[in-house]
Amino acid sequence: MANSSSGESVIHRFVKIVSAFDDTHRSLTVADLARRTDLPPRTTYRLVNDLLLEGLLQRERGGQVRIGNRLWELASRSSPMSGLREAALPFMEDVQSVVQHHTTLGILDGNDVLYIERLVSDSSAVNITRLAGRLPIHGTSSGLVLVAFSPASVQEQLLSRPLTRYTDFTITDPAELRRHLAEIRQRGFAVMAGIIVPESSGIAVPVFGPDNAVVAALSVVVPRQEENVPARVQVLMTAARGISRALGWKGKLQGAVRRSQGG
Amino acid sequence: MANSSSGESVIHRFVKIVSAFDDTHRSLTVADLARRTDLPPRTTYRLVNDLLLEGLLQRERGGQVRIGNRLWELASRSSPMSGLREAALPFMEDVQSVVQHHTTLGILDGNDVLYIERLVSDSSAVNITRLAGRLPIHGTSSGLVLVAFSPASVQEQLLSRPLTRYTDFTITDPAELRRHLAEIRQRGFAVMAGIIVPESSGIAVPVFGPDNAVVAALSVVVPRQEENVPARVQVLMTAARGISRALGWKGKLQGAVRRSQGG
Image (cartoon, rainbow over all chains, first blue to last red; front, side, top):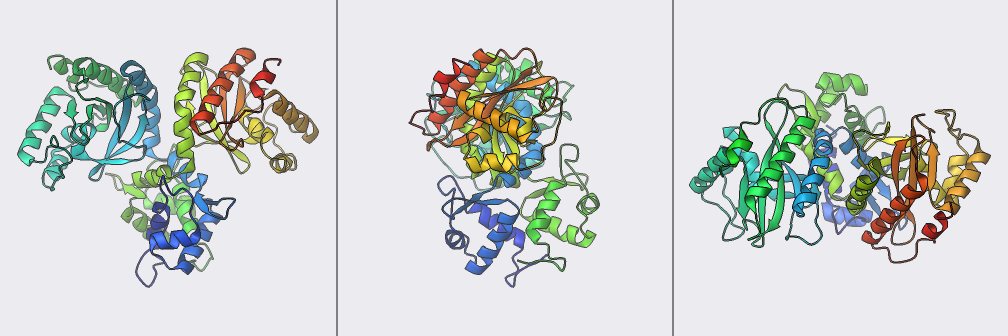
């Protein structure tokens, strides 16, 4: 609807405008915005005006604009992720206080893991996850756990794509990755050492929703060679069960905890 | 730009659509959306389509739509609030583990306090704050602290508006509120008992940014008659200084801690 002569919807332009802001560009002038979005200055000016009117952008003292509180509010209040994040946060704090390393909560979104919460440990492993940041599925323990416990079609989708090699340890061969996913599913957790940055290992377990479908991955990022896997898997699994209960889950978690004690 | 015959911008309609979702309506059909937004069905259908294309809405199995992960991601990644929230979270955990009651972080937005983070305690006081929820400024200790430490114009704006009485303890008289704000500013914290719900008290302190301007209010919500104000104010002030330091603040905090020891 309301497409321009180029066929681009106003909504598409809105996404372009909002995407022009990032960690290092939190305030921009309208001219900056036109340049970064490749939209005509006049179009940019009008759209920014509409966005200011609705509070989706806010004007700063210097005349620059930034993302408005209202956008965050609209997105957060009714997002299905807010419930998940809120259920998980107390258990993530427990994990972090016991494990003393970065603790993350990720969901599957397209070809990526989207991190919807992360608790950062000051003096800890290199951690490249960001809040609301994305990492490739096959580059993270969270991604592999999410796929291992998803329907087969999700796994086939991952295995049919060309996969980037980030380090010597990234698994890019489909046959090897398939074996790996089967093992993760059987053991109930993933441990991946140095698959995206050489210094860090990820340990991740699935979080199940009320209908026993995987809804998130709970993980810790620890320095390599200090994985201490058995203890940490038990901590993560305990917390993951707590999150599931908080989400309304009442059934059995595929016997995952029992199995892992043998691993 | 791209206004309809009614003069309503696409952005305004987008806000209407997204606002139609809430805690009890996380999934809606397009027909529901048309009804709840009062937009023509055809317009709603087209706009929903554009939003689905950009991932701002997502289709569920039953054909209903919900807020898309992409909207939350766009809003969170570059919002100025994300930095504040991330700096504050570890200190909020400290407060909650010591005080054992709900801990909130609020900012001033229009006539409201917008809660950008909250840690919930299971067996604690009645707490009507919600994440990404709003409460009226004069109904919360956070709101009064935020106004007390804001420029005089913000205070005048509050005092010039008619103020709703929520309980017998809500202060609605401008002269009395002005005295109260002066006292909060002088003591460095606010304690408000039962001003919005009779069962709970709020204790709040200001959080200052690098330029010594107030950027947020840190508060705990406790049962009435169990305020234990002196100890809790000290805990909150300690945490608030930590947040300020994490935000890059290097100066002096208006001697607030010293003053409060006398209160």
